[in-house]
Image (tube, rainbow, N blue to C red):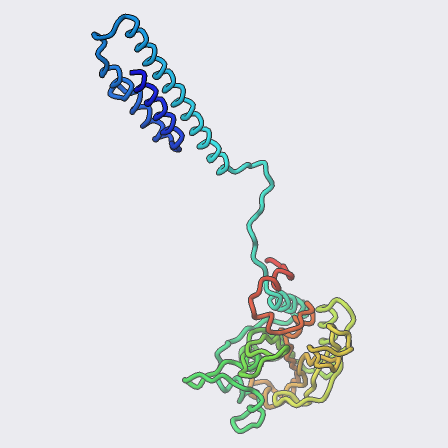
Amino acid sequence: MSTNTELLQNQLAAELSEAREPKDIEALRVKYLGRQGLIAGEVRGTDFSTLSEEEKREAGRRVSSLKAFAEAAIGEARAKTEERAARARRRGLVDLTLPGTGARAGSLHPVTQTQMFLEDVFQSMGFRVETGFEVEDEFYNFDALNIPGDHPARDMHDTFWLEDGRLLRTHTSATQVRAMRMYGAPLRAVFPGRCFRNEATDTSHETTFHQFEGLMIDEDVTVATVLAVMEALLRQVFGREVSVRLRPGYFPFVEPGFELDLRCLICGGNGCRVCKQTGWVELMPCGMVHPNVLRAGGIDQDRYRGFAFGLGLTRLTMMNFSIPDIRLLGSGDLRLLDQFPAVL
């Protein structure tokens, strides 16, 4: 019996060292200390009638010692297992006294920030905002803007045509005649939105870009009105004095037509990739609305005159945020966008 109790003690110690879960500890308790367990079986398997009184006492002491060892070892193993489980539970708890990390909020795209700012500026001057349609009719995109089918100016617009004869608008000017027909004169309106042209991309050109066009029709509108409005606008956009220049330009929907250039804010006019080493960035075409366009919009061209402009919203954003490549704005790269946070 002495050998058996020692073997059982060593066997129990080995099995307890492998147990990791509370259910494993309980199974060992039943295996060794249960009514049908190994220790009880050791007692039942001993023929005490053949033992002397001294041998009986020795056998009893060995069984009691084995039972005490088993109870203590199993109890200690159970305590260690429960402590491990408690530590795991504590690791999963949230300490409400710790500072929170907060949820990551979305942000407005730099182009959207610029567009919303421009809308606020023009609305403060009495202009309404009209977004129009990205898929347009040929009439509103070309014909109504004094660009008939055989007009060479159509070659300037590398157009995406749809199978049903409609097209992706090449400029937001397409909304101007719709606004004239809807609201009549006098009229002050701006037309922000995406435009599409099938052209080669580089640091300042993309196939999808944003424009912000405007139209003002009244009885006393002149070229001086164009300059006054544009200079006031750009000062508010950039928060500083800017240098602009007007160059003669040809656009079928205005007469006379001009190109308004902005001294490059990236290089200060010294020349860089954005301004193609000229020191100036072509910012917008503008001019007095052509009488044929007024006529297409149902406006009395003998009584009313107007000016129109087409602001390169994407390029303006590049200038405002000092972004050197237009393609970055459409990349969705958070390393760039996170530098210009703005939320609603």
